[in-house]
Figure 1 (cartoon, rainbow, N blue to C red):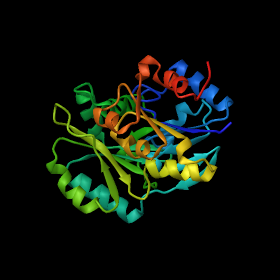
Figure 2 (figure 1 turned 60 degrees about the vertical axis):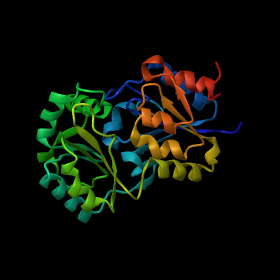
Figure 3 (figure 1 turned 90 degrees about the vertical axis):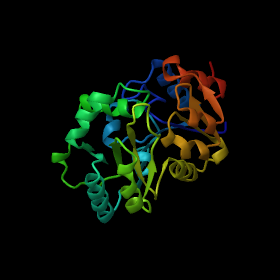
Figure 4 (figure 1 turned 180 degrees about the horizontal axis):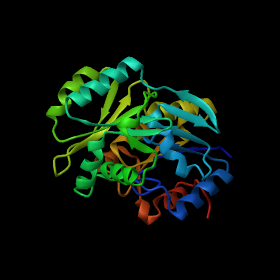
Length: 278
């Protein structure tokens, strides 16, 4: 058979936001797809350290930190943190503008203490899965540590939260050449959250790199996502599928829609698009 390669976002796609247990139907779908000769990769904004609870399930590979870290069957293909100079500039300008920072490293993530208090107060407001994801991860201590414990390890991505677009003006001017500001937009309560992604890599570039490495045509790649940080991945893949719980902008980008996470969307989509047999 012609093997296909499947790329799965985690939060809001494979699992509910901030959770680490996929629906049993999704695990069955992944196992069946792999038995039938397809490759299955996680493709996530999470850092490697935040993936550990999911690695008990078998995946062929991992794309972490939005493409800055890639493994295939334990072999490292990409390891591209931001440079020390860019890291210093980014940390300084974000702090100067009162923006809450969470830096992602291989061993875990480190967050400003004020960020915890902010999330606990506001994560339930609006329909903001990224805020909810971070609230859940921080409260469960999923390799997310206070910034005071950060010892200068290489960083792959920076999560930001602030309350006004004005706070982002200087950071965007200073950092725009080095980072993509992936920001879903302001929620109904006025809070802004997003990711600063290393411009050298993103999920779309990672999808192409993995397909090229495995010798699989892009036309045989399938990507599942739900949020704006999946945009490049969905645009790159041969077939792009947005979850029913996904953001409206992402639904417009995707080729197809499938049911939500809680409605066994992965299972139904794998069946519909012939990635598995009943």
